Length: 358
Image (cartoon, rainbow, N blue to C red; front, side, top):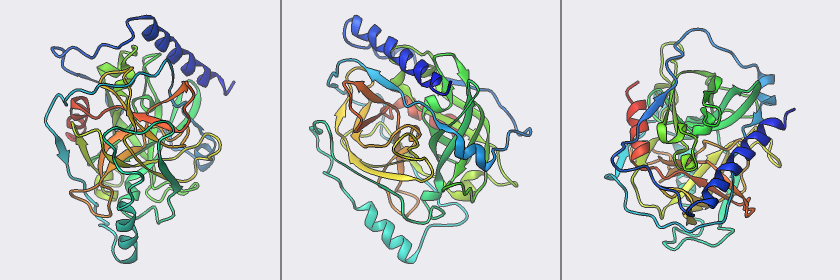
């Protein structure tokens, strides 16, 4: 029975891909006169919620990474539909790293795997991926973590990051099932999770939001596969003041280099450790609009919702901008070494503006 959720997700996406392929061969964008709106879960509030046991967290399975099956189509990106938007991060009450740890992170931030080519890369695109060897409780790593939730009677895992004072960035499919039109339950975020250790505890859901363009569950919804989840305070402190939060950037250039993070849990990974994937813009996916961006990686299910960070560094402020989240891969053609993120455009601005009000 554990394979059932994977089958359902794959079939639903295959049906979507067949509808797109059978049509005019292109997906229409959301009309300009219909502004991107949000749909919220509605406050869960601060009433007692499920506390996940160490065993439940270890046994939770990776939520199916959306899989697309249709002929590849090169994108033709248009200019951003809004101004470049950037918001700085914060290291929280603990502060930024110093000494040897700061030096190591500065060196890591200078890694450029192949550079950002304006023409992209053919498949498989270059990338460098490895398990994070540093202390997870150092900024900005402590802003990254695992997402746990229940859907259809199964316990699942995704990845996420702290995006503001009480806001978590993750993939839309890690918060909302747009096939059945239901929100996931028992949702918690565990920052700095490492092999069962949860040094900052579990942060329960207060509210969540996705765009209506995603919740519609149509053939173009994957182009808006991101969500903001608001979490309750713990012991009178917000998560942002406790571990810090990342910056964010929207309506930016597509030809960038990112540090992509996540907790891959499907084979050959076990999901117990944070992985870093250094990669640059490889291609724009013309099957959806606005065109999602593809980069090289071998990360698997469980990495969904992990942030693409631009200007990764040990400092807060004008560094560490979330500019995408792990979303989907192609299975026909089979391309296991390339993952896509929705483009962070004005829709991401709408989601962020909602989330930073908490």
